Length: 270
Image (tube, rainbow, N blue to C red; front, side, top):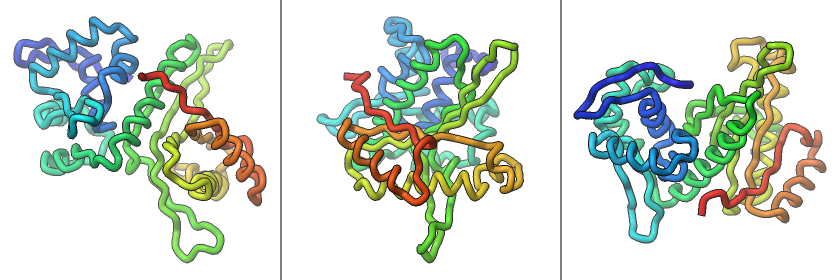
């Protein structure tokens, strides 16, 4: 996932890790310093503090706090966006203008805490993967539009559009020297949605798999769907909520059992 580009800019020698961070902010729009600490600095607080200060001084990132009682978070600046674009580091993303970038950078107060919760989940997953020598993150995006899909649910007149909170590819080194890939979608629940809404999301993911939608996205024929499995990590707020949705998944027709991984949100950032 590292980037080899290195540039001298405003007195700072930009390193591959800096570009990884800037791209991460372009993808996610926001993250806290604690998220950056886990995702890009291996938990080294002093190194993170000094580097973030330099990136802020170079006006590539900034601190934002929409309201005094809201949490502070980091954002990519227009200058940082221009740098990534000029270096050709945004080829994997939709082409957007600087005006569109500024518009997308605005985070509504209604979605702020959800997006930070998504980043909590991302940091926790990355941290867990990094602790396993045989595992590595090949891709982890939290830009919903990149992986959104439509499925036709039974009894509904129009297709349902689902926008995942995240998409993850994890590589695993096998004992024989081979490499296997594990694919996941991420859904983060803050307790504001009904259980039926969560069930409908699970049904949509199951349809996306069984009807070959994900296989087609990967360039295969829909009949090859079994060759393109994925699982959904659904992060929930409480044990009770996990038990409730688990009951609904098992009673669904057909039952959805192994495809959905139900995880209780741990307070890894306080």
